[in-house]
Length: 621
Image 1 (cartoon, helix red, strand yellow):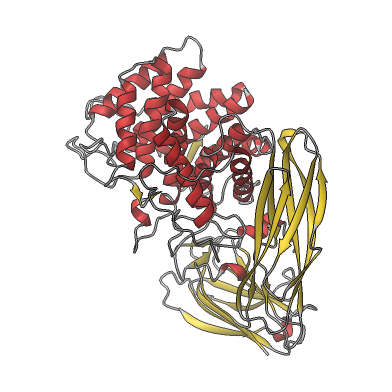
Image 2: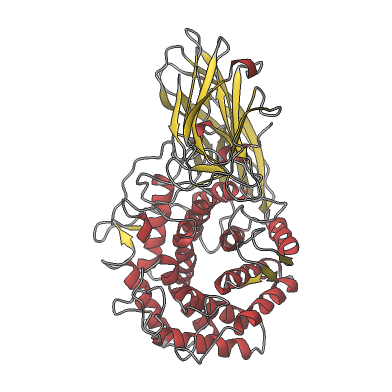
């Protein structure tokens, strides 16, 4: 298997991040702020990393329906903000492939009723906003028409007979909450603002705003609680950042529709409450309730902060209030400096606190902070750099140096040629050649960044200590500068819990597998995951031990393509009662380069319970 750089980087989680602590800025201090070209370049490499997870056949981001809508919205924001248009085909691919009807379990846990609607009313609304974003980018009427169809579907769940109004959260009409109604206001106001002579959707947006602001869900501190009890009083539940952000965004879009001066004070109250003591910020960093020590965000919560930042960007653009623009700069800086690994993956906890989680959902969320820092008028030039591989693993031979090939990928936008100088640096005693390389890039605007690459040969001396060692490369062209790095892991033994940063250097292909926390990577249905162990050329024997349970198939390979099954669970276990450490001799299966591969999949692909791995070790002699 030949992995594209972005595919490989998807597998690399946050092994090492820059340990710069960002707290609240001192009074009167100017928060860190990237210049326009740098902010654009940062957003580009993070957007490319996100899109490496887009699955073109089902036309989504695997295993999450509404989250896919938000991720595509985020990519739409990126394209609109920067002028990059490379991902318009993926938006249209999703529109055309997923607009029909689908059974429960194919794209969503719910049956999809067609036109991106389901019993989950808020899910439907997210897709409505996604297609308005696509319309803004392309002016293709089909996207706006789809958003209207979705709004017409949601309109049927506005119900004044309970609590005086509001949209129900689900088809069973059991709950009225903040997210569904914040979305409703934003969706209907966006439709009005794009449809000349509209009165219908404007009326719905005003009606929704008046009901929501009087519902009691906005508490006395100006924070948005989750929803209403059966007696129509606020349930006082968790203040999630996405509810706060949607309320801000709903008011802003309605203000644009009406120019009603009474709306902005409410919007500002919501915004000020979010960043006030007791709000959503810890030491200057936007922090979700589930980011707190001892808690973990589920797959939904992983994307909440990004939604908040999407609408905070709107707030900063609309008001130009220095406090709001400073907050944007602070979040973008902490994400880039603290919450990013060598492969430009962005994690759940923007402060960089451990344990951190890295996946496409956290990528989409943190990307919104980087997008918000891009100027409203994108710079005419930008330069970015990445490395491939970003986190190579070396299991060294005894007494000899090791060579690693690292490619520096360059991307640039602009209207004139750029002479780009690439300068690498490495730990003392290491050698990187060439020591300097000049490349000419000839960009043609912003829509499609021009690309080039520089190959580096890295010599790692014998006896290098186990651990992570960084090789950095800085690309410069005049005032433009961008640095990237490859974190090279030296290890004589693989020994890791799944679902941690220690796992990811070894994770060769995650496919559609998932990891719900520490010691919990699983593959069900037709998904799998593959570990690669690059044993040295003088290896005479090797083995791997997996702590594994449930319905597993374990296969081994010497090239990652031809597989031999070495274990199959033939009983339909769902509760982990067959959990055990199982050791497999890899020696007969090692490839010509002595690499060994271990793949785990599902022995009962139709019942939703697959092989789950807790811990893995691999050793060699």
